Amino acid sequence: MRLSRTRRLERANNIGDLRRLARRRLPRPIFDYIDGGADDEVTLQRNQSAFSTYELVPDVLTDVSSIRTATSLFGQPTTLPLMLAPTGLTRMFHQEAELAVARAAGKHGLLYSLSTLGTTRLEALAQACAGPKVFQIYIFKDRGLTAEFVARCKAAGFDGLALTVDTPVAGNRERDRLNGLSLPPRLTLRSMLSFAAHPSWSIPALSGSKFDLANVSHRVDALAGGPMSLFDYIGAQFDRSLTWADVEWLAREWGGPLSIKGVMTREDAKRAIGSGATGVMISNHGGRQLDGAPAPVDQIAAVREALGDGPDVICDGGIRRGSDIVKACALGASGCSIGRPYLYGLAAGGEAGVDRALTLLREEFERTLTLAGVNSVNHLARRHVRRVPR
Image 1: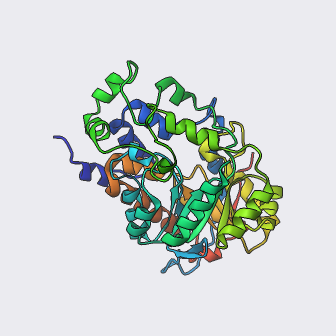
Image 2: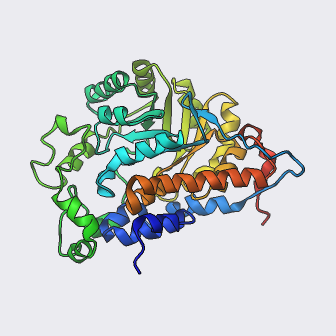
Image 3: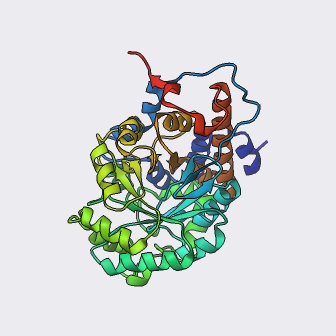
């Protein structure tokens, strides 16, 4: 007897189970876009495996009858030290796209971040998002486009900006090259069988409404030149000449919470705050840019030591368990940011799948705090985590 999608989601006991459901539902090129990284994918694998090199050191005989998990990120209250990272092209994974993710985030009281390369207009997202929201932004060669985004985010009521700084060029994502991935998704000789074998994805994706990058398509006739023309436009807009002076300009233009996403060292973290940012997101773009970069979790302690207690330090990358969030916070992170975990849920079951991913992480986080003898996220300390002895 075939299980309903709802029942399959209920039987998912962890993020790995949701990943397997997503892999079954998506054509190979689309799943590989979520799952893949740059070059040999060394950093992609390291992001996740690095968490296993830390062990939790529990307290005992602490009153854990009530566990307090609430904190704040980007100056906004959140029920967990967790936010949903910006991810591009979200409609490729489910037709409800970013709106489904934002609704699930709002239900859980978590912060959601919309990508510049998302498939939902930021104004529509703002109306649908009941919780705190951040817009991920680039400083383009066309500074007018960046200034336009700032003005639109102010008008729409976004709570913060996350400036991505690790994309002077696109990373070498060989799975996507091999699969011939394009926007909108199209049939090729290589992908035809995979698309045909996944009709529950292919029919809505290939026959639905126009597929574009909704927040920038007004600047160009997005797909007039055929698939990939919009990617070419965006790629041409990435500016290799960016410096910290551009961060200072953006901080003045925005005037609100601003995190620099892509910081990996204590030195750059200090420069970020000195340039007007209120926090940093330690990130290597999910292993999709520079292969060989350190795992974010390994950089937390040094960055926190450099910045002191004030600024947000968000660990972005490799989180698959609630215990990973506990480890990151014990090392000094203000919170963690997830991308693939909620995308697996979205692909597996739309909004309900995202809800399942967030529920699993929340339950694991609370259980880990309880077993570690820590009754509040604010009581997590460096002594609760240590490197596994070699």
